[in-house]
Image 1 (cartoon, helix red, strand yellow):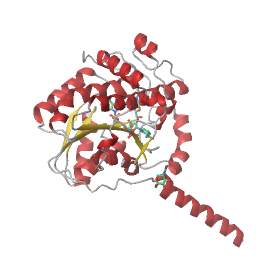
Image 2: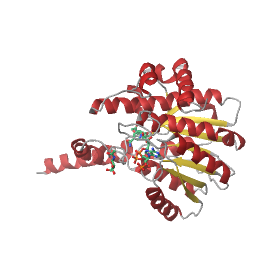
Image 3: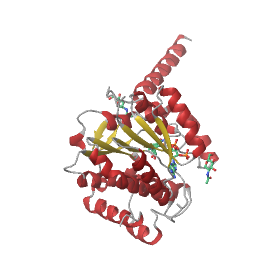
Length: 318
Ligand SMILES: NC(=O)c1ccc[n+]([C@@H]2O[C@H](COP(=O)([O-])OP(=O)(O)OC[C@H]3O[C@@H](n4cnc5c(N)ncnc54)[C@H](OP(=O)(O)O)[C@@H]3O)[C@@H](O)[C@H]2O)c1
Ligand SMILES: *[C@@H]1O[C@H](CO)[C@@H](O)[C@H](O)[C@H]1NC(C)=O
Ligand SMILES: *[C@@H]1O[C@H](CO)[C@@H](O)[C@H](O)[C@H]1NC(C)=O
């Protein structure tokens, strides 16, 4: 009996330590205040985007919630204001699956807001489909929409330097590839709707985020703008909402024990946005609030430049 109690006690203890130390991960320790600074967080109506927005609003920043749904965006606006106690929070409509919407957003933002200090490209989707412009949905939303948005806002970021661009990627980029033939013929990072296809194409889009950051850092040399990509951890968010119901059911026990909550999941984004002295690490990839080494394919100069030039064409920048 006492042996059983001991075993149960040890298991519970180990589980507790695992969940509260390993899963929880490192916290952003910066105490930076952001009064007078303006930040944009894309996809901030839910998930880690929302908790990131709340944290930044608490620090005094003027926070622009850039979300696709008016209804979900306005609900989040009320919640972010309430949770942060700040009135300096604004909703501006942005659908990253539409190049026109990205341009309209940038135009409205540049006309109505004098500053931009932090651009947090956080929105992401895990689902097959097409954007309004006929791009693969994950390529279009996760990469091209943010690529165009960043480029349209770059002059304002430069004027307000030191400023930062944060691209929320994923450890999944390690499994990604960029198939330029497929991009040229289908404007997508892959085809097919199977479980494996969707996972693969998502990982490909996250590799785009990392390569985009790598190339952007080079182009920003000599300016006061720096950029970072990151893996936020495995997080209990809404990202899997469009996967099969069987997968969602199987995920529940795993999520409950091994996944971070959305406050824990925002910490690496906050670290990249706020940590003092990160500038020499511009272009690098972070996870668990630490700069990590990348495999060669994720810092491939040739692929990054090729992706940039293709993205310029597909986003209508050139
Ligand atoms: N969850 C994880 O374990 C995990 C792991 C690694 C990386 N990430 C990355 O973390 C980021 C945040 O994800 P999350 O986990 O917080 O997921 P989430 O809860 O699903 O939030 C994603 C956000 O992106 C928005 N979004 C989707 N499509 C959009 C579009 N066309 N235009 C504008 N916004 C759009 C969503 O808006 P709606 O609510 O209107 O759909 C939502 O606000 C993503 O880039 C994701 O790839 C997540
Ligand atoms: C994150 O870092 C903390 C502190 O260094 C460590 O205890 C934890 O195990 C790490 N978690 C992961 C998932 O790497
Ligand atoms: C994705 O999931 C959300 C939430 O369950 C749902 O409202 C939406 O219609 C789904 N989209 C597609 C295209 O299946």
